[in-house]
Image (cartoon, rainbow, N blue to C red; front, side, top):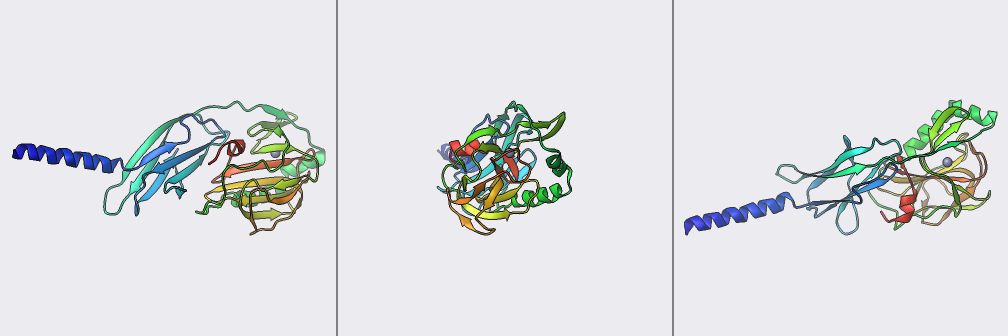
Length: 285
Ligand SMILES: [Zn+2]
């Protein structure tokens, strides 16, 4: 009888401990993302007072609260991300007990990014090599790395203008025989002066009239490490610090800076990493 009781207690303890070890669950938005995708890592069944951290490819990613009481980490997989098998690890640290770790495996697939040839006037080519270029890039990259806990975006993102995509994300831009760069956003072709809408709600972090290379530029912080950028504008009608709502007009399409005609360059960044913005228009994050 005592023996049976003991066994029962052991089984009970085993089940409880096991349940506690696996108290949280990881859910990936996909286990087969491709270069350019955003990977969402949801942590369900989180315990109050515990701290969670997310690790992927030797980098720690911020974990933020989302609706419904879960936590989530968003991981940007840029065009040059090395394809292969990876693990996402979530570590949980509760008060007065050992860290618990759990991981999920995924495979990042290669995507073929086509080559596109462009020609710039001699004057515009000079701009690429100019030291002004670095200053602009530094200011922009700082603006795109902003991290705030609160999520400002709601639902799907919208295309800032309704135009044909003439430059896809990730295409390799070549001028003459020289590789310039991989395209970090999408180019939407619309007439000069077309109103540009905020792709989602957020706060204006940069509204810059004086950029030589990027032209008139706006960046919006949507919270939780998600930012969008709008380049080559003709005019800007928001200021740094302004709160904007999805669909609000932030400026007009132009061809300022290094542009070969009127169009909107629109980019989306995840913790400062450029990703393909179109999946954000097609699905909700
Ligand atoms: Zn572009």
